[in-house]
Length: 287
Image 1 (tube, one colour):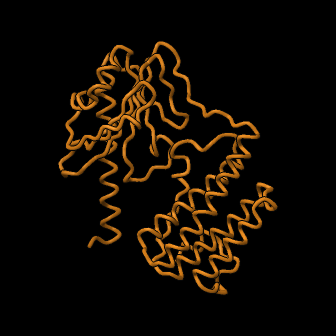
Image 2: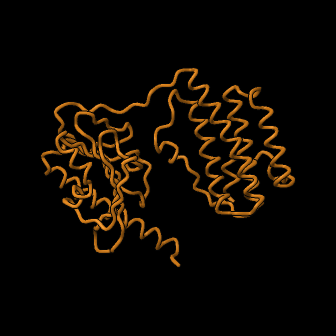
Image 3: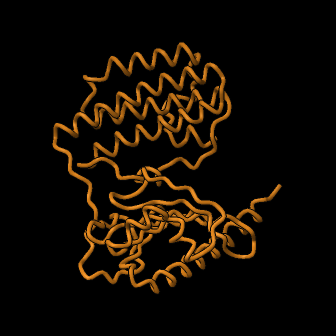
């Protein structure tokens, strides 16, 4: 079993090799006259990456190249670097472009370096707002993608839908806790957290959260693995949701539903501990 020092040493070495790989790929892409721009997406583009983060590379190519890449994206990659795994997923591709998940063969350690590739046609390319440009020799400025603003009515409806989803998932999670399946419980607790954060996002913004926006807010504390710890965290989530509802001015709309959810938690999870009173979501998951 590795200790903390060896794990951190491994991660730091992995990051160094990943950064060397990125420099190599950018150098190779700069030599391709059909590549107009390259940027870094994902956590490395946003600036919230860690040493184990993968590479997410956006590539803008001349329009006449895109059809061939869509047909066989792996060939484009293999012309740059070797691969040991390729997974095509057209649903993840930008409009009119292509996507490929790869494990790149790199370095002497025999490790999988994941690189997600996104290809864009020059005529329709839009750079994600959080992406970090690495190269740009396009003849025209590439516009930055912006999310459509929600009307007041759309935003109100989206906030209400998000709150309903949290309440529904809280009751489902309580049922799973009572049944004692820790794998499913962990998944449901994560869903509750993300749904509540989505509601808070909508209250604070005039558009829906962009892809991956909530990932940087994910919990870093250990997953609670006892009935008591899981119940405490779920009750803290319900308390936090009450605050979210109040900040949205929706107490009257959701007071009955939140009261019913709380009664259900008390019944299915057992009586509350005195320690549950005033507990925040962050502190509930830290033990």
